[in-house]
Length: 128
Image 1 (cartoon, rainbow, N blue to C red):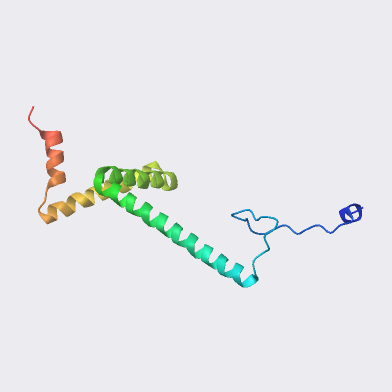
Image 2: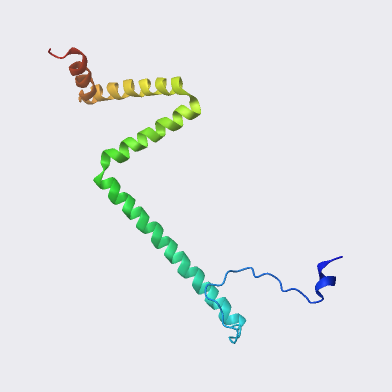
């Protein structure tokens, strides 16, 4: 047997929206025009709040990045290396890093800035 046979009364359909404030029993439901205007206003206010939150979050992240350059840089490098190791493997990532280092070294030599070469010459050929 179905539920309608046992209850005898017609069940109310479930609401599709969540009410923000409970309505009193003596309050009448607002007219359809007023409710659609209120819903549109609520959606636009929610959108403004979300955009404000995202804008504020972005501003905070940029402020943090401005004050902590190396933390953000090395964190990003670590993330890229982790993605490379997990997707293409450890040895392929090492080969890419070696080629990128050699390319950066050759580029610095061509630019006249021997920072990488000077670093390795101090590291391996320094005075003891």
